[in-house]
Each structure stands twice: as structure tokens, then as C-alpha cells.
Amino acid sequence: MKQKLIWRWLAVITTVGCTQLAWAGMTALPAAQHAGPVTYVSGGVGSDESQAIKEAMHNYPLVLEFAGRTSYGNEYLAGVPVKIVDAHGKTVLETSAQGPFLLVSLPAGRYAVSASYGEKTEHRSVSLLPSGHVREFFLWQM
Image (cartoon, rainbow, N blue to C red; front, side, top):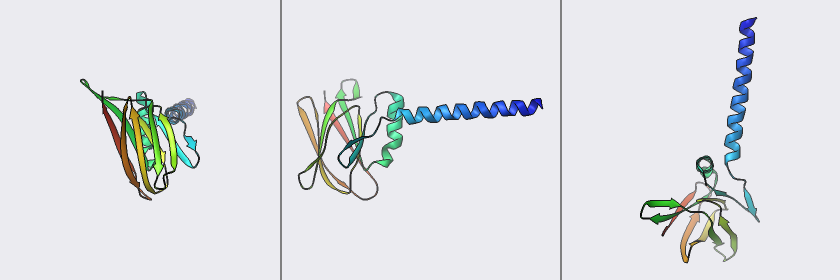
């Protein structure tokens, strides 16, 4: 009888512990945002949030990463204005990245991406296929 009670308590403790770990993992990813039909996640500040975003990258066709080069090495940037324009010249997303990562769900096609830091704007042309994803790294000299 005593052994059954111990096993039940271990099961309860394990269940509660696993639930808390799962909840912690779910809350580390910033909430998805929407701009018309475009869904995006922006962030990556802090190790938990950064790890959650890295784990979610494969779910998004376009991954943008922002950093600045200093004399000490590369440092992640936040607050980077981003604009994505489709092949017809229509702006499909205009936002400010809340961290060093911006994950964007867009349909397959060609897009022009621009990102700014300070007075400098970087431009990229990307082609998204129906499967897979494209990752672009923006690096500014600071």
C-alpha cells in the first residue's frame, strides 16, 4: 500500500513538472502578429526567447536576423525597421523588429526586403519557394 502511494505521488510530481516545463517553453516564444494575411514573430531578446525563436524558425518561410559589428564582435540589434514589398510593388509588411529575429510567413514568390539601422539601410531580394525557408542576415558596422 505504501509503495502504491509513493508511485502515485511520483506520477503527480512528474506530471506537474512536465506541465510547467511545457508551459515555460510555450510562453518563451513571442506572440504571433498579423498584418493582413502576413503572420510574423519578432523578438529574441534573452536566452529563453532566443531559443524559442530558433526552434520555431523552420515553421516560417522567411527568417531575418539583425546584428551590428563592433570592435568586440557582433551584437544583436532590436528596433530595426523592416519593410517587405512583393513583386507587384505592394508593401506586405512594415514593422519594427522587437529583437534580433523576425520570422515571417509569406506565400511563395519574390520579395524585396529592406532593413534600417541608424542612417544605413540594407536591401535584399528573396525568392520564397512553396517549401523550405530563406534566412537573411543583416549586419551593420557600428
